Length: 362
Image (cartoon, rainbow, N blue to C red; front, side, top):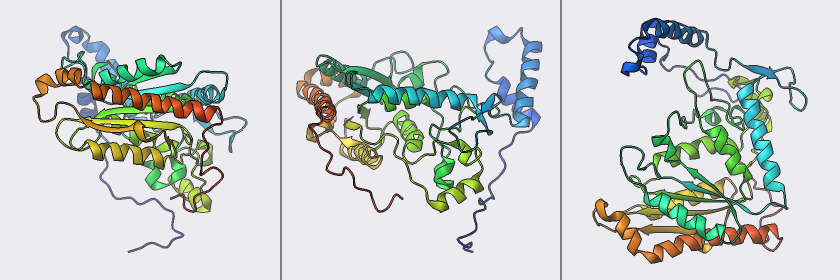
């Protein structure tokens, strides 16, 4: 039955995922499997009980501070983690706006492959990132590399999945994301609070990804989903008093402005595969970035190619060695991105949509 439009109560009905003490203890202790822990039974017992207490009491954000001046409710207790993440974004925004600084490009390696873990070999995506980096650094760009292969190779490096707060109400999705860390649930060591400032500081972003089953790689998709808060997310969690879904629904129905926190930055994308799917992946990446109101850098900045087409995986690096054309195309994609950034910062590249407002935000 369709509920009246005025009904804002969040829908309920899914199974409760809460663990009992025995299940929690077994899952928590499973991370201490090495022989170095064999003599630490009493200590682990105490640690397990402390972790259970935090979980049972739901202490998602145990360290808080009053929001203070500038927030809708200055007396609301904000997570210290969120306050620090917001400060990092604000500092990045000042860097982005400083005309005295050199153009800043963020190069994103989307491949999970690394010689430092199971595949035992570097990725072609990383090699293409290095090719792009050398090209634009030679022309004066300040380059930051976001190597998403660290998710598979570095201890404690995670991008937790988006919880889809935006689908409940836009105002419930906070900028930056306040879903993590969740200490009670063990959802910690989340990388996104470091990644958000990288995107904010950049004038241009180049994303390079392999094709994985007709789609982007899983690290890229995790990052994409967690960047939803940059596209209409709420920069003031006190408006919704944290994660109060009913209050957030009311805020959206009052009229939500859908602020685009990354609008105006330029983008370039490179999707590469070996059999099929590269064009679709390139289109999906470009469509996503356009929807967030980033600006395409130009025709040569969007590239889909096959490297070692229908050839053995074993020789794929040799295929890239031999394909000097694709190497130069990647350089040109990065150069096009830098040229667009430089022209825009110099006031020589007009935005034809400047001053226009889309009639529909959703």
